[in-house]
Image 1 (cartoon, rainbow, N blue to C red):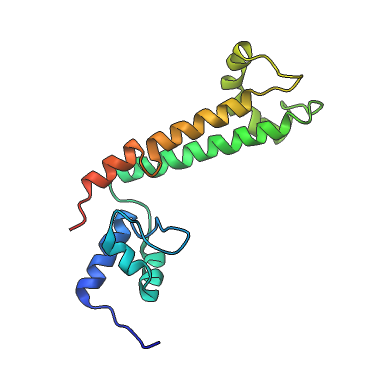
Image 2: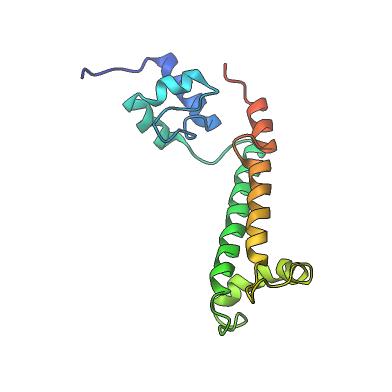
Length: 160
């Protein structure tokens, strides 16, 4: 395999694609984002992969920051509720003590009213499972691949 050099216009394009996060959204088979055929072509380039890994940083636009913050916030909530699901298997644990308080304090305000609506099934509290589903739905609707904020972000950053 011979050495390939990247020209100045290609470098500018790669920087633009990296800023938009197009190159970061790669498929498992290594292709770039299918909505951006140029990104797909450059995603397979070994230099492009190295360049994009080094160039992708925090988004610079307010909408990009909102997208990143919402994604992280909703992922954190999902993780907390997943911890709550595991903790339902150990009812003898006191959630008001120690490190478990870090899991129970942010989740209990949502779980308490939900428990009044959804009774335990077979003695098992299923409300954390309900919240994981709801948060996953909201995350997909807002910051998923076809989410509202994602679509707004892509509409504000033209490819060419």
